[in-house]
Amino acid sequence: MLLHILLYNIAPVFFLISLGYVMGKKYNLDIGSLSKLSVYIFIPSTIFLNLYETAVSMEQLIPVAFTVIFVIIMSLVGSVTGKIRRYSDSRKNAVKNALMFYNSGNFGIPLISLVFANTPMTDYAVSIQIMVMISQNLLNYSLGFYNAARGSMDFKSSMKSVLKMPAIHAIIAALIAKAIPYDFRNFFLWPAITYAGNAMFAVNLLILGIQLSLTKFEFKNKEVYLTSFFRLCIGPVIAYLLILLLRIDGIMARVLMISSGLPTAVNTVLIAAEFDNEPEFATQTVVVTTLFCLFTLPLVIYLAQTAF
Image (cartoon, rainbow, N blue to C red; front, side):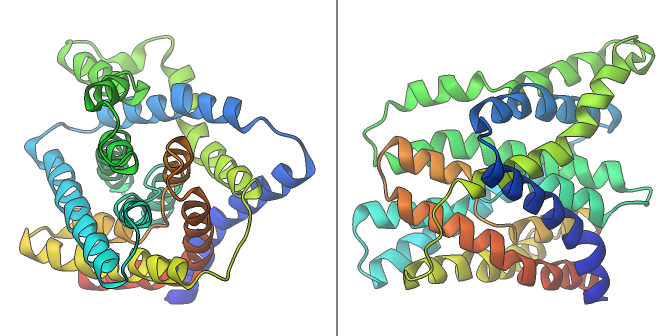
């Protein structure tokens, strides 16, 4: 079972990440332009497609509530760890961001689509992960920025930037489209949106590989390993307990638990660099968690499928 998960769920993801890494090393690729294509075209298209084709209900708020609570708990874990280890304020904030925010988009959505591939619940599972991604992004671009800046950033300005996110516009557009008594799947531009949405999975993994090719690999900092352990191993344990507490079950429980074991979000590096808040530590944590999740994620997926 674990070998099957490794070969058919994890290996395809890492194959594309590896291709992106090789391309990033061989060619001088403009990661900024590629990221903009993803943020402004591919991700919004995927969000629009999945939300439009999935029945909207109060149930979809459950992943949002779960993500918010999970982020708060992981923030507390980071604070306690920082106090015990006597971290500086900047290091403690970097650890908190590394624990709170995981790669729910570039890595998470393709992984969930593979785990639930060839099943009637694929779209439903992906829609849950999309809600997790949206929640993570909102918190990342608000709380994450504010946390990295140690309160020095204008929170109002941060929220304005969040509301300008194309992902937010895609959600609004999908909800408006669902309210209109017309099947937009018959609209002549629907195939174009579908093509763009389907491209997101491969493109985002390639972008992740390219981003990793631009980072400096350092494996000497033991605090990086401790943070990575909390992100990849303790995170799923906390998620499991929270799922039981909230009485979530079925496909949603599986998706939320699998998602909780994802590597640290690449955006944490961008945030750290923006405010000069331990950028090297943030980069090393992203690299280590991305590499080590090759070994931890198959077990998390197996346990999620077994438990729920």
